[in-house]
Length: 322
Ligand SMILES: [Zn+2]
Image (cartoon, rainbow, N blue to C red; front, side, top):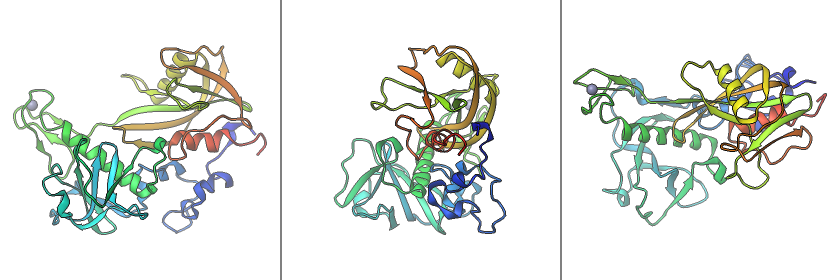
C-alpha cells in the first residue's frame, strides 16, 4: 500500500492513543473519519471535548475563583502531589502580590479559569511544584492541561506584547467581545498572532526522508518544517522548504491535520508529500543530516504529543501492505 492511500478512517488510525471517544467525540457515532484526528492532539481546543467556553465572547467577569492556571516560563505551577491538577477555588494566599495581573480565560467544566504569570525568577511557594508544558521535556501533564496551559501561555504572551499600538505607540484598548486590541488614537486593530508553519513527511514507496538538526537528541530524526512566507500557499511553502532544506522535489501534497503550538504562537500544518526526484542535498545552515529510512526501520520519533509524532506514527510506521 502506498502512503498516499492511507485514509484517516483506517482502523489503525482510529485507534489513535487508545481513546475510544475519538471516532465520534460527541458520541453520536456519525462523524467517523470526517475530521482529521489531529484535532485531538494536545494544545488544540478540541482536546477539551467541548468542556471549555472562551471568555472572548464577553459576559460578566466572574469572581477571581476557580481553576488557576499559573504559568512560570513554560511550566504550570500546581499543588504538590501526584494529581497534577491546577489550584481550585480562591487564589492561595501564598501567591498574593507575587503574580502578574490575572486574566479570565474562560470556563472549563463550568468553573472560571484564571490565568496569571509568576515571574521567571520568583521562588516557588512551599507546597507547589512546577511541571513543564514542553512535550519534548517529557511533560507529565494530561492532554487537557496541556491544551489549557497552551492557551494560558498564549494569552500571557499576547497581553505582554499588545499593550501598545505597533504603529503609533499609544496604549491600546481591548476590543469588546474579542481578544483583539485597538489603538484609540490611530484606530489600528490587531489580534492575537499565529504564525503558520508547514511540516511534511516525504515518502517514496516504502521509504521516508527524515532530517535532524544538530541540537536534537542523539539518533532523533524529524520531518521537514518551516514558516510560510509572504505570497505563498501552504503547498508552495511545502515545496520550497523541502527544496531548500534537502534538495528534492515533491508532488501529491496532501493535508493531514494541524496543531496549535504555543511556543510561542505557531500553527503547525501537517502534510505528506510524494518524492518525485532529485538528490538529497542537506542545507547545513538548517540541518545536520537528512537520509532515507525504510518504514520498518525508523529512528527515534518525535514526541507523541506533537503533530510530527502523529504523522510519523500513522503515515510512516505502517508496514508495506499494512
Ligand atoms: Zn496607533
